[in-house]
Length: 102
Image 1 (cartoon, rainbow, N blue to C red):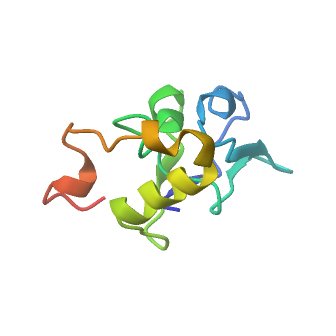
Image 2 (cartoon, helix red, strand yellow; image 1 turned 60 degrees about the vertical axis):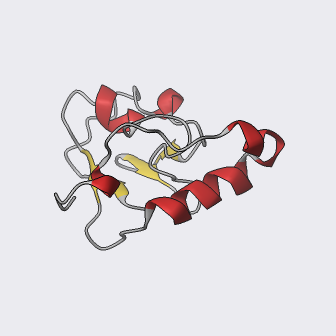
């Protein structure tokens, strides 16, 4: 998992339905992301949807849990085995294919 929700989360809940893997749930104080389910939307979208909809920008890359795009794509195929053949790596430029660190 390379996406985390910071303590700035206002518990608005807009991120939860956007996750294609149901990795986001309400925690005791803020929403949280399950690292076993998070694929950073690889295989589904060009960017993390939680970060796109967050009104306070608290869905951010977790510098302590970096993963390669291939590992995230493999996880997406495993989680969604019934549609694994339909998942594709986006041709769009992502942070995985730039020299910019996340």
